Length: 265
Ligand SMILES: NC(=O)c1ccc[n+]([C@@H]2O[C@H](COP(=O)([O-])OP(=O)(O)OC[C@H]3O[C@@H](n4cnc5c(N)ncnc54)[C@H](O)[C@@H]3O)[C@@H](O)[C@H]2O)c1
Ligand SMILES: O=C(O)C1=N[C@H](C(=O)O)CCC1
Image 1 (cartoon, protein in one colour):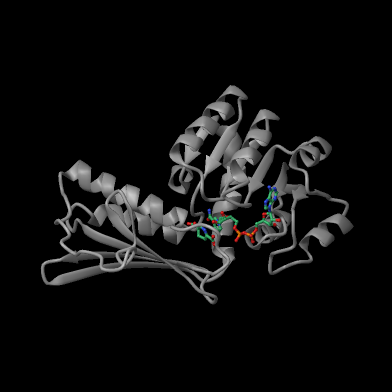
Image 2 (image 1 turned 90 degrees about the vertical axis):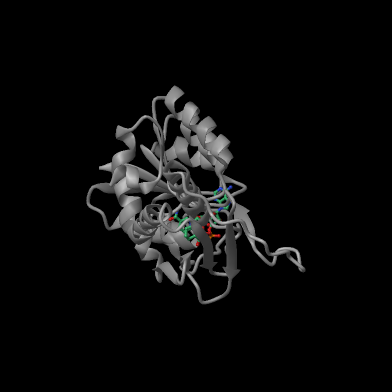
């Protein structure tokens, strides 16, 4: 049994991870960390405590109490760097779903993981459909280099653009570059700042935040007299759980940083 702590156990994602880990015969949920009850399933922390599972609001203290092999983190962009430092320094493997880490921060944490002989797995998106969407987008990019991304998420999401949109843009840009393809220059002048969205690697990214959405993305390709649209929809946070469980089981076999779910598929 792999001993698992969930950081952010009361959150929208963390509470799903608690349920998924509890239901998996190869995993043992030994602890959880939560600051507030913001998730849709607000009974999770209380339920864990009732079962005698260590709960607390101090990550280092929870780790010292329940000695996990793997910590899963779904917290906030502000908290994740420090959380990772704490876990990796204590020799705990990490599975990180929290978005917001920069490439430089990922590399720095990867070195810390390697120095402590543990694995650090980071994925901006754990759903298989989203991984395929990114792969298909990279495949299409050399042939249809004019691309824009629209990502649509629930209105409680703290960051924009989404980690998935950033990674998609990076993959598309890399595939275009490798093929020697480039987007046609844009001639539009914004009469209102922000009208054309943000840019990641010169690719416009538009972020929609509305109640009702979970996590969705469209990658729009434009060609001569034709359009190709790739769309992925996570309609339920259960869509992320097979990827999270896979990562928990694999992370200890890969010392240092592994980035992206496709690396484990
Ligand atoms: N990789 C993926 O597939 C994927 C999928 C969904 C969400 N996410 C990301 O996961 C993160 C969490 O999303 P959410 O919707 O579950 O958020 P949420 O706000 O519902 O939950 C966040 C949780 O973190 C806790 N928390 C905050 N700061 C903390 C700290 N310093 N230490 C410990 N716990 C802390 C809160 O108490 C809460 O329980 C976001 O960054 C989001 O973008 C990633
Ligand atoms: O709900 C969120 O927040 C999500 N965040 C990830 C991102 O930023 O890409 C993945 C999808 C859900």
